[in-house]
Length: 349
Ligand code: CP3
Image 1: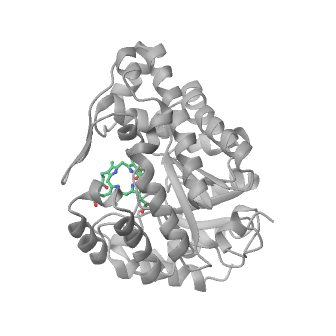
Image 2: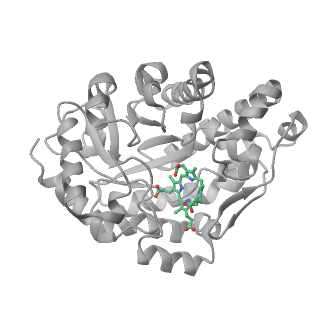
C-alpha cells in the first residue's frame, strides 16, 4: 500500500482509493488571511526571514492544522528560493510581490551556481521539514513542493511576475539555446531540492506550474509536460513510493492525459475547468485535486456551500482531494474556510 499502512487519507486518495469524504487542504493555507500568520511574520521580520527560520516556518505551517484540522500540511517556503539558491538576488516588495536579478542570455545562465551548491542556501528548509515530521499529528500528511521549471524561469528572466510571461516567451523564441540551458539547470536543481525534502520527511511533493496556461501546443509539451515528467521520473527512480502532484495551472485541454504523459499520481485543477468535465476527462486517469474558486473564501454564504457540494459530488466516483483552484487570498475571511471544510465533510456523495 502506498500509504505505508498508516491510513492517512491524503495518501489513500493519492494511491487511487475512492473515499466517502474527500480529504482536504488548501493552497496558501498558511498566509496573510490568518491573524496568527501575520503575527509570526512580524516576529520573523519579513517573508524571506520567515522562510529561512525553521522554528517559525514550522510554526506557520502548523497554524492552519491547529485551527482547522486540514488533512495535509504544506511546507512553508516559496518557489523562488530555488533561483536564490542558484545565485539570483531575491527580495519582496511589500504590496507588489517578488523581485529578482534577471537572466537574459547564456552568460547569465553560466553564471548561476552549480546544482550541488543549492543545499547551502536551502538547508534551513530541510530543517523545517524535519521539525514538521516530529510535530504534525499522525493523521496529517506533509507535502513538500517546488515550482515547475517554466514558472520559475519566467521569474528568473523577467525579474518579477508578469501578466503574460512575455519576457520568458521572447527568450524561448529568440534565444532558445540559452533558454533551454536555463530550463535544464532549474530542472536539475528542482529534482535535488525535492529529493532533499523527501529525505528530510516530506511524504508527498507538489510541482507548481502557475504559468503553464500561457504555453500552447508544442510549447506546452516541451516546457510544461516534459520537465514535469523528467522531475517525476527522477524522483520515482529514487523514491518509488512518494506520490507526486502536478499543477499545470490553466492548462485547459492540456489537463487531459497529463497523468499519463508525466507519471504524476495526481493532477491539481484550477477553477477554470468545470468539475463535471474534469471528472470525465482527467479523473478517469487518476486522482485529481481541486477546484473551488478562491473568491468563495472572500464572499462565503450559500454560493460557497452550493459550489463546494457540487464539486464533492462531481468527483465522488473517483479519487479526489478537495482544494481551491488557486491560493487563498489575504482578504479571505477565516470563517469561510471553516464553512468550506464543514461542507466538504458533511456532503453525501
Ligand atoms: O501554499 C502554502 O501555504 C505553502 C507556501 C507557499 C507560498 N508560496 C508562500 C507565500 C507556496 C506553495 C507558494 C508557491 C508560490 N510562490 C507560487 C506558486 C503557486 C501560485 O500561487 O501560483 C508562486 C508563483 C510563488 C511566488 C510568489 N511568492 C509570489 C508571486 C508572491 C507574491 C504574491 C503574494 O501572494 O503576495 C509570493 C509571496 C508569498 N509566498 C506569500 C506566501 C504566504 C505572501 C508573502 C507575505 O507574507 O507577504
